[in-house]
Length: 195
Image 1 (cartoon, one colour):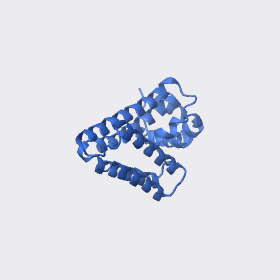
Image 2 (cartoon, helix red, strand yellow):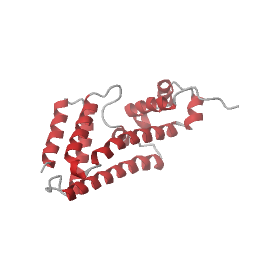
Image 3 (cartoon, helix red, strand yellow):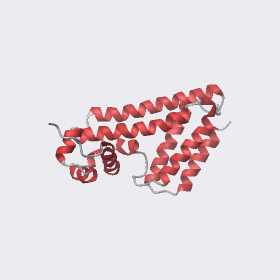
Image 4 (cartoon, helix red, strand yellow):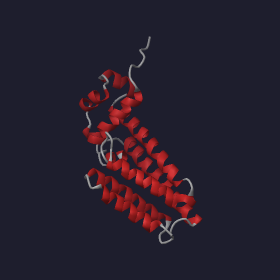
């Protein structure tokens, strides 16, 4: 008879996510993951297969959370300036007050640590990034068509500027920069976006 799991799988994924976020995929070892998750080696292997399988689950869990907020921000082209203001200010709030997790964005942080990862892992992270970029590009194109943002840039240029802002916010947070700097970064972007 198969044993039932005696742990909360979502909590284990969250604990592992924190380890990978802090140490990266290459830097995280089983000696880091087992105590953080509270799993025995056999439970981890039975449930997730291996470190790689656990990492995949953390990436998909994080991506689904971050995608939801971005979908909401780009949902209504006529309201893009207001919804991006809300989205970006909430990002700054989360980055300035990380509440128990490392600063910055998980996907941004781990992207640079996939040196020993196989093609599937790299392809997953790159694929998630490309899908996000396509969604953002579509959102800016729809907002330009709706006339809700300034036409001083193309949808591609707005996308590049927005991505640069997000990456800059993540780096600023990782560096421990003052929140006022991140607020100014957002304010400058929003001022440029305005009609």
